[in-house]
Length: 351
Image (cartoon, rainbow, N blue to C red; front, top):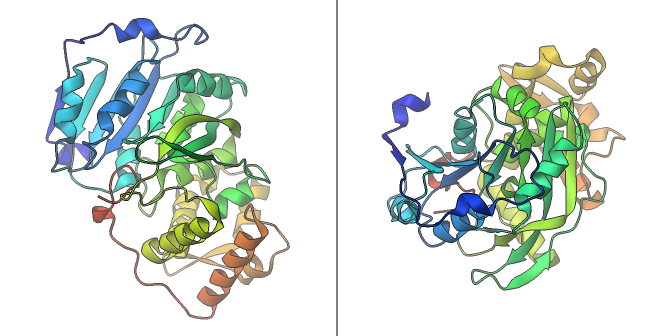
């Protein structure tokens, strides 16, 4: 699919600095790391972000950037860095989730770790080392790593550090909520091979939630409660983290109303069962079927999901909100049609 929409591949040559020598000593055996970044109208901050990644990239590391149809100077700003470890693909506007999943299909099979980067954050100096330590700690099973973030304003002034999910990762949680923020995510080779089986599935809008769901079913999710990046909050954020309880409510309302959140959830469950249902252990497959069913080519919630004693989401308030939305859905209420992703930036922020 991606070949039809790629206009060009730019290989940026002649590095100005020997950044390859800045590999951290604790990245043993120099793992082959591929960092994926999807950009859209990101000229203002993308250079700063890329430099923060390059300064810690292992010797065999590569950054693959897919520009999602920017009409500003994003690509020109990347070209100014002139580092051969950056590969840039120019593509049509797909939206951030589909753009990142398209990038994932381009990763070579011999990769040791795949990481995901937004265009406007700043990575702390040991982010790659910590992610590598996290995915290595679980052995050869599929592993997904995520971490806390230090929220900052557009000038990198610290706002606060995000809290650790109170109930931790689980498949039940992954079916209804995402706790792995994409800009902190990293996967090992077994997880990459697992995810590439589905390619770029229709119905998946949030790539990080998709990673969390698939790996939760077949592997291990590692959450690091120490921040690994400066998560920049600014006026163009679509899926940013808000500060304070009022900001949290505003952010939740924005996601639910703009993105048909329940429709996104059900579409993702549908894609998951379609691509991985036959591979699930029988008890897990039966458990999911007790709470979701297919009707007319779509996946819908069962009443057992609405009234289940299972705790699905991290907070009790969010769990109650989920059940209210499910109840309204079962009673015939439906949000407006899900927005096309074309107006949403490839970094998960509005252009």
